[in-house]
Image (cartoon, rainbow over all chains, first blue to last red):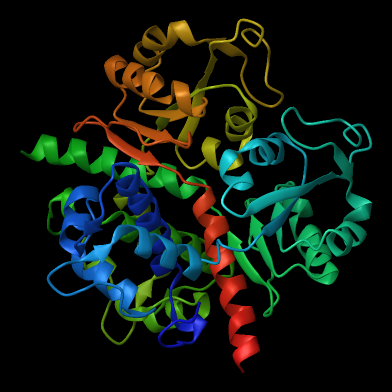
Length: 222
Length: 222
């Protein structure tokens, strides 16, 4: 499908794109419930979102709603799937068969909706050849370049220790992946042509800490 | 320490608080490099942030910078640690000793900067008593309430399968935790007095998918 207007992808923030994912989840829920149309205000009220933000985020990609009526739930869901590129298969390779790598290779979200894990690699010869329950057998890290090419891997996921993460990233880039998701708690030197997203799991604990801290302070003040 | 003005904690978005965590990481990096003062513009340029956003986010909590000079790096770092409540110990309990639970219990970010994992629980008797390398021994899920009270647990982390997540959440709330971090891919019915943050790992893959999709589309257009 064609979007009504092209905008430079660099000008759209990651937060906007993350919100599109959230809207998609909400629309899938509404569709399950048999809801046919929804206004931005109803969507906002139901899922604790911001209606002006919804309209602004969607306006980047075209005009989807009908004034006074709202959005067709099924159509907007399809649009979001298309905008997020979830209508295409994305082959994913995991580097590091430690606990996190194994957890992600078995995580339902990493094997549905277009995503498919096609390899899990590890440098440890004791892990190579072992089958991950409900997933694949671990393959040698030394085969990374060959596997990326043969299986036409789009996305590399890094779950090795921090000290090995830059090397894993460089190997993925050299092998030709187009995007990397890094879970190693370290800052990687990125390559301009390869989209890099580092996931900082600690940031979620810090968010909770903020609320704990202020809830008790406010309580003690009040 | 006292903040210059109290604002209702509910009126501050999670995104603002996540950005405070990011600013804290940046300031820690600058301090390592020996930088003494930094303006919001320099901070933005160096770490690809938005200077107006930085000023707005910090203004919620007081007046930290000096006009024309900028922020004292060490002082602002201390303020952020204080605002995020990272100057207090936060005791964390993990429910679910599967791969993700084990990975998190060994994750450096969950055992530094005030956070300390004090228990890892599982319902599987085969797992109970086994020591996680570099972490604790697994304890029975049935002891959750006793452990939360005895060890004064602040934060519960849920890494059980989706089908068991609501039960784990309810048990944590009943036992008296004040905040819950949920990794199970399911929507939980939350309790108004307990802060709940659900982490959706798939959203990161969808973000990469968006960039893959638009990079190739833009390339084929251009």
